[in-house]
Image (cartoon, rainbow, N blue to C red; front, side, top):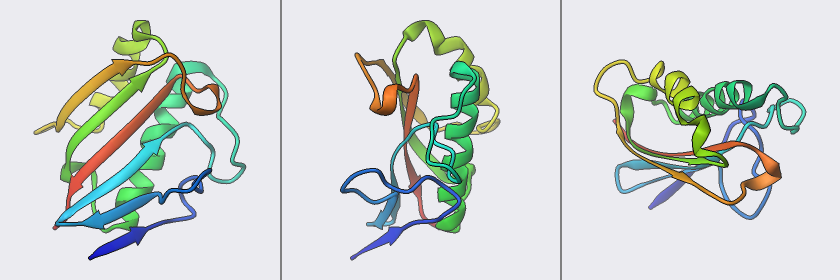
Length: 126
């Protein structure tokens, strides 16, 4: 069975997908971009502001599922520019101080709404 996870504390899906799905003992979150949940607009301020918003959005979805960052087992970071890696890594790392998840980071040609960073998360359900 699968359970759809959604919250108004994170941006609404902008396509035919769910914010998150619990299945098989895991929570799978769709890629999070830097949309302000209140306005649906991309936050301004470059890669720092975008990464901070992405992590807030992920935190809201994890909380909606009764989980936290400590439950995350795998992430994939998509960057529009690999030159932003150190900046994104610094902010991201602040959320995983102990036992960080497995991670992949890739540079992509483009991301939805022209954002600079998107992060996808898989967490273990308790």
